[in-house]
Length: 442
Image (cartoon, rainbow, N blue to C red; front, side):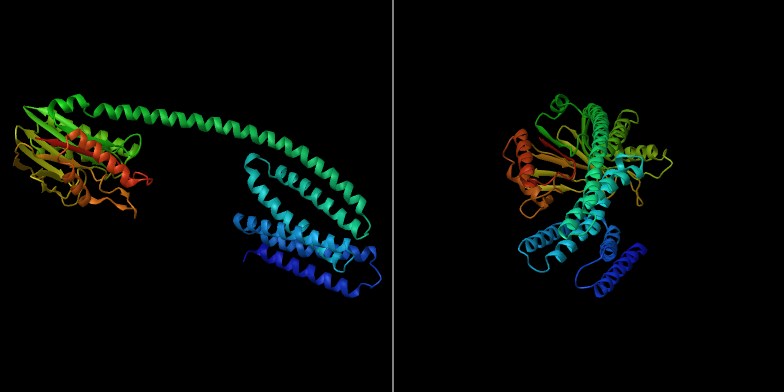
């Protein structure tokens, strides 16, 4: 227990002790000025100890204490006034006890809460404390003046005028503070909006840069006439991207999933996209396995320039079409071929494009295709999306079933159906990752 809490407990105990001793020694006919002062002092000590204890608690506990206490004490005071009006016994005790509790146990805790709220709007702690003293004491004096008047104790008029002066001074000072606070908030809001605009403009510019490295739809349709690309970034920019290159009668296309999403993922995607381009254009690689080997080498080399260890990279499914001949290589991401309502799955190597402990050359798979075959490569964003009635992942099994169900539709219609099912599945749940699916029909 904190020392200040112990001080609060001891203060309350001393107040209770003083109250009992004063009560025992007081005459039955009435109280002298000295005895009134002793009673008031003992109550202040008792209630002040409670406030010292409560002030050490967390903001949540303090708010709970003040809310409950304020309502309870107001009810006690009102009951006391009602009993006094009806000339019933215990009226004075209830009113006095409730008023002192409100004045010296609850109001100081309220003042502490106000201090925590307003201190960020000033550089002067003394200014806030001064304001709290003015308005808290003003309310206390006004409350005590009413109690003293009802109990016919001396000093009620002095307390009344002191309270009025303090409350007026507090209102004037708080008005000045509010003006400063509103000015501060307006400036902060303007600065925040400016920063938000700068960040948004930067991200939108990054989106234009990322869009520039993606193959345009016109090029895609030129080399893959019967195809679709479902591309749904989680954020403005994405870690997923699709890639295409045409070289010596071969059409290379890939669906890639870089580490992360958003701005970090987009930065990694630029590095990986550049490595793919260099593997084909600069180093002349012409098989998927060799392209991935060289891409991996270039990505690792690029990230090794950093003083910190960077383990980022990408998973990818890379295909090459030359007539009806298909070659494929993958890093974690497989290739699905649907033929005669059956799925042929060609599995990827279990290693990423990036640093990996058990490195080996990527495998190039070859296969002859027939008219009507449908090819699908994708990132993990679609099957990993949470949704449905139970909020579970969509999973690859459901994706396979969905693709089989929509096989009779044209490829562009398949894209629409896949997108509609994705949105229906996730419902109100946030999209958790970028989505990229490429479908091609032979």
